[in-house]
Every structure is written in C-alpha cells, then in structure tokens.
Image 1 (cartoon, rainbow, N blue to C red):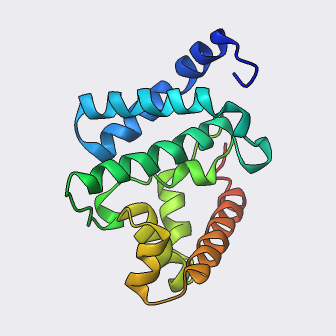
Image 2: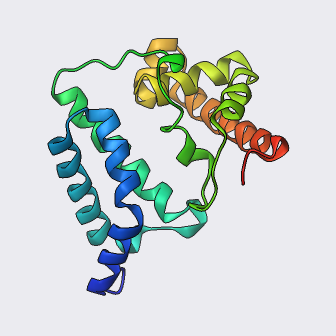
Length: 172
C-alpha cells in the first residue's frame, strides 16, 4: 500500500475487515455507523500506509488502535457515555494490545486472571482506558495523577499482561 499498489488495499480489507467491523459495532452499537467507520479507517490506512512502523506492532494492531480511537471520538461526539465495568464487557478491546500476531489467539479467562493479578494502579489505568473508553488525559484527570504516570502504568501493565500470557501459555 505504501507504494500505491491498489490490490494491497483489497488484501488489507479482506484480511482485517471482519475484526474491524466487529470492534466498531461493539463500540458504536449501530451497523451503519460501524461500516462508515471501517471505511474511514481503511481509507486513512491507505493514505498513511507509509507511516506504519512494523517495530511498533502488527498491521492488525495498527488498524485496531486507529479504529478504537476514532470510534471513541464518534461515541463522545454523539454525547454518549461509556461507563461499563470490565466484568460487563468482553476482553476483545484489550486483546489487540496483547497479541501482535493476528495468528495468535488468547484465552479470555486467562487474560481476566492476568488482569486481576496486576498491581491495582496498573489494573485501574487499563480498566479506565480499555473498558470505560477514557483517553489518557481523562484517566489522568479521573485518578488525579500526571499523564506521564498514566502512560507508564499502561505500558508496564501491558508488558506484565504479555509476559503473563506467555507464562500461562495463553498465546497460541
């Protein structure tokens, strides 16, 4: 795609559209909005393909992070509120951050146990960000901590979850 090959967009669409659409639908709750968002994210990926950095994660993760961010922006613009506990949701929003290889699958029960075993400050930041849909700035305000602390707790928590999933044999 970065070289402008049109067929690459079709391959990207075929490979990642189901996960993108499912995630968008889960966040937005309406199929038409979800389809519009997936279209916008894939168009943006086409336009910014040269920005992709393999060292930062898989293409799937790159797309899902973009999609999640835009979905939450749309959600907020519509005046909706996302306050749901982690127990009330699936772990699907967190999984892309843990499995950079699209071929990997994760056992939700093991992820839940690994999240439960995180130190409370790291667990709370992840819950607010991934399950309540708060931005890093909003998490910082909610917890009354610096944004740098939010980012470092997020990074440390995700690193511990990745390690725990490998230790559990949760990545297959």
